[in-house]
Image (cartoon, rainbow, N blue to C red; front, side, top):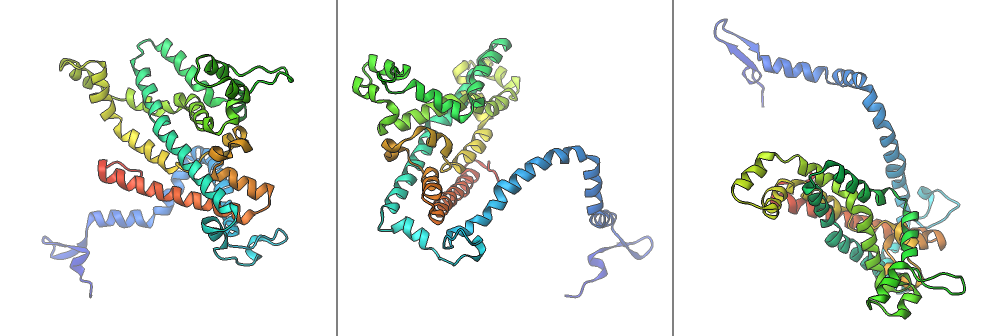
Length: 352
């Protein structure tokens, strides 16, 4: 199509000539000097961008550079050659994991099931706890008391995983008369109230596969419920006081205010955090599992990350380990996309 002057010029009736629109002049000037303005902004706020640099380096070295090693999922493992120069193996590793005749396929599906169950239980029982803790913090009128309770609940998050798992192990440890060790405090309490038998308590709860998931979830809630409540508590304190006053005029009590004022007001925050949680549904932190599990509890404790660590490092099956982790991450990505789509259609709140 042939462009006409009237398509991008404005006719001036007073002069009888065409002229360029003022808004178009501004847009052209902005486009012409776009990178100059970007440079000026960076120079003006150079301190902020300097603070951003360490995070970018962390993502670069620990997130993007390791993607090169994903080629190991499709290459024959040969430590004497770079990954790019190794022979192409196709999807043989994935076939071995999905439907191989060896015990590896069985172990992978067991680890995948355990990964999903641990994350699903954490979503069901662990996700609501920070919201409940934030609601309780909001009802504490004394700022001093609230600060003390918040610090107490935040502290477990600042312990290293090694310290936290060591503490959990001590609380549920087995009794060993030869080593002079008594039964753990939690184990002893459960035996005294009749929840478990003395034989199970003496053997140690972490040595019984049926108790691993409960110990993992309870310790996870104890560790992260207080710290994760910060986001929800910040959303709660941003609610206008007029909303509470209107609810009180209508005769709403504390529970009714939580239900009809607080929860609807922080719904968008809950949805965003839920999408993030679903996105990491299959990313169980292998450090905690690795420090808590043992061969006796592989049935319920072994997850994809620990399986990959065991086969990749201990047995040298790098291709199998990389393929297992890649499958796990692909499923996690699909869960994020699905959760975001459902949230956008159901509540008009989404990450993107």
